[in-house]
Length: 583
Ligand code: FA5
Ligand code: MG
Image (cartoon, rainbow, N blue to C red; front, top):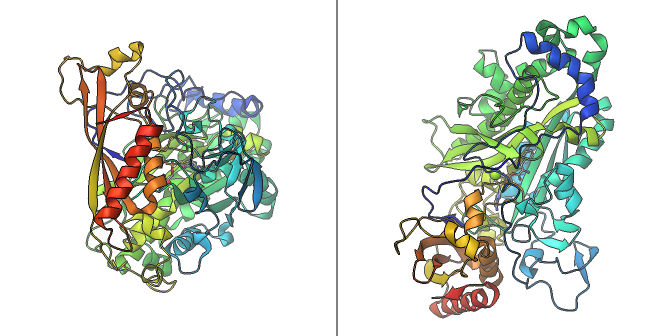
């Protein structure tokens, strides 16, 4: 859901994400000598102070102590009296935590990423071609969408009070099970499997699955979408074994560590790296990828304050692993751009642009997001980082270092084919499906453009509690429009930006709940929901919000009566289920 949000002051007082876990003490002890011994010569930090999140960096939710979003309205999917839910053939006991609407369940089992000639399937194959099995990546998928809260959150180090765990962000099957909010829910299992596979020459994987989020409604967000996860590991232990203590005690010795050498060699073999360093690149790769990709990466690889390296890693290791990861990912994006150029979706005359943005994820550090310049704005494609050592320890591969990323497949496919609206991926219309095929560079041809119709809905938020009033009221005391922020549907459930202010300002209203009601009533007939007006009334001591709902079918023209009827139903439900007063 888009918000007209400018200049909202973000309060960055928290240390929520700070604590880099010391749980991997055992591993640290082994590595401690080499890390400490560098201190004389290395420019990087030695020990890991508590990490204080910098102003403006609000990935993965709110700091501890900030208020949680309110719980969701009662879900349509939970019919009274039902005690068992059957999801993709498996049964789950239902409890009060259940909040999965039927229309979300209707998306389960479609497996679009396996449907031949579907753009999501073709996009998955393109990603796999950049991380192929003959280069040590097991290409996997995981169809069953229900995972435990342990897999989705705990195993990845999500704090217990993380807003992503709330029912406003996540679909709960019961108190212990959710529809996965990201493919990272399988990271621990897949890393554990690598323990065996590392010996057989595999050192990484890709995984494709559907994921589910109570998210906003617009052309690049859908509550059910697809992600691919990728990861790559190197073993570190050999190096420690073969070098003497003396050798480890100087920087040169560290640099000679066999593992580092292996990572460097792997990195130096990457086509994009070779291209940028004037090394020859196989001609078929040159043709496949737009290697003139322009990358903006102005920040240092790690920063103690804003994007720290882990205490078990040396600066050299982090630099190399990050460099390997970024060049591997950029190569994939270069492939996407070349294909889009071949199809005439983007021009060949301009070099495609991408930029790396520091990020936060509980299970990687340092972390980044990658954005691409697309249709005049930056579009976020993926999150990634150096895997948290605790995860590798838990997976049984403590002497390893590695990277991981998670990509939104729809976003990639929109780029590849010029598909303008994320809802189209679910279309069963042959006019859509017949356009794509493995051996053709395809530019999506709009087969219809049915008229849109928008309607506004305005309401007063509940009166804030006394202690919230001071924070909510505008400082000048005037009854004027003020720039406030509402919890955006920015997917705290597995990433996304959410500011502290956003959640504190409206403790009893969450935009995701509004989006859910709109979806319940109108499903795919709504293209966009956007906040168009907001102000605070001194007299009423309340805030008013006005949302514009854009109705447009991808398959037919909606009649006035139909839209009026949908809109009335949405109004009724909002009034009945959210604690707001319609205006
Ligand atoms: C994650 O989900 C992390 N699990 C990624 C990760 C994996 C980080 C491994 C580190 C290591 P994030 O919430 O940013 O991160 O989502 C990843 C991508 O999914 C986004 O960049 C975007 O491309 C896509 N995405 C997110 N929400 C939606 C949505 N509602 N509809 C469509 N695509 C979405
Ligand atoms: Mg994100």
